[in-house]
Image (cartoon, rainbow over all chains, first blue to last red; front, side, top):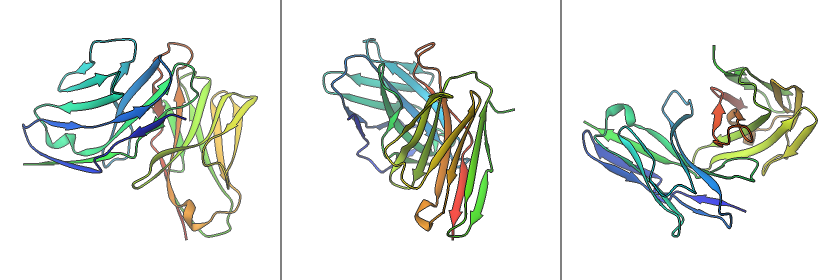
Length: 114
Length: 115
């Protein structure tokens, strides 16, 4: 079974600073997808960024980027120039190309301070 | 209108009552899911369905049942609610195996409180 581990239950960052959220996963598959979802207080689940395992280039979406280390099974999210609106719960998730559902980590709560 | 709609958004009920959470989607996806979110536990899969005739248990299906009434509708039932089923419930759809992005598209969640 695939597992996703987020080792940081809570993180804090000041506005305009950079923060990195950690995620590791366990799999024997070679073809899979990794995701970061954001859940603000509105409780909506919002896709932040997606990475296909066959792509060596790290995905980037504006201020959000990932550091995908396939051999280490690590998938961290970097948020640059943090904004108050980035405060949320962040979930790392995994699915294989042959899988049936996303497996989620337990989440990291990000606090952004002025 | 939202692509994935859940009703009700919030519900308070008593132990032993039957509860149904409904989900409908306009994305045209075959795959639909029910997840449960608890603080500190992330999202856990309750049931999933790949088409109207295909229903599968997830990791925490005990105490729940589902019905896939149509491609667009997937309901979750608690036959006899208990307090530890108090949680936030999400319905989601997936574009697999179509465009193969693997992304889940979520409803807005149903907050259930069982007293």
